[in-house]
Length: 348
Ligand SMILES: Nc1ncnc2c1ncn2[C@@H]1O[C@H](COP(=O)(O)OP(=O)(O)OP(=O)(O)O)[C@@H](O)[C@H]1O
Image (tube, rainbow, N blue to C red; front, side, top):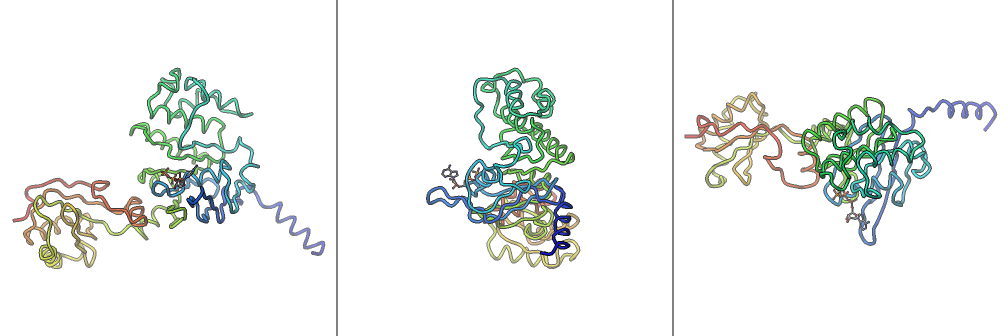
């Protein structure tokens, strides 16, 4: 390299600010436990300020990936956090809420948060952190006497007491009641708004859909899809659907054909151009139904002689993406708007 080129290369290296460097980079990350391949060559990149969601079935490798990225377990492949190997990163910059957490000894929630704060040169005021997780009123109870949800909130407090730039949360809301979940969600949103990069593992699809800028779906130790929730839903979520629960026997092929015939007669704008009908465990499902088309579909069901007990309309969600890409069953009760068991909607 001549002097001019060397000077220019060094100038451009100096120009690279931390904002230009991905916060987390994993390339070909592999981890086995004996014969069990927990991670089978995972590639993952998390950008500064992102809330990055990681979802996948039990045993897919999520916790192992969190542990590999935080340097708490060995793994093959390349891992960089803030551009360095995980064990070379200043611990002050990383917060970790592990999936399971055993506090060192018998301490109150306040003492526990103070203890973890004391491990860092520069920690937040424990009182403020306890307030963030809604534990102020219970802060003097021994950790071991707290409820499951209160324990989890205390754990979240220990993970943010160092005001980390990168926060790993492995199933933060497990066992927390709905109000507590909301407050943790608001906390994550606040942290993200202040620039904290968040790596969030969860089985709560609504939580990930709400919070994550991008989501990776892990299955059998490999990433099978990654993208913004809306993009994943558009690509893999399927159509909006009307679940029709029938009181009596399951519809046979002739019943389904009758419904298809009746649906063919309704206005195309009420549904997708060609609404599909399929049989389900409880009755049948009409795919491609828009909200404004529900009434017309109900009329069509009536003219086909279908008597139903209840209707549930649902638009596709991240849960549908998850179920489709993991091959698990769709459950109409998992989401959607119950439209009731209106008697006037019943067939003839
Ligand atoms: N310490 C360990 N020793 C042996 N096998 C392990 C160990 N940790 C994880 N595994 C195995 O590695 C695989 C991935 O486990 P991991 O805990 O990463 O999955 P997960 O996606 O976090 O699951 P869950 O949703 O149930 O928390 C599983 O088959 C698990 O049994």
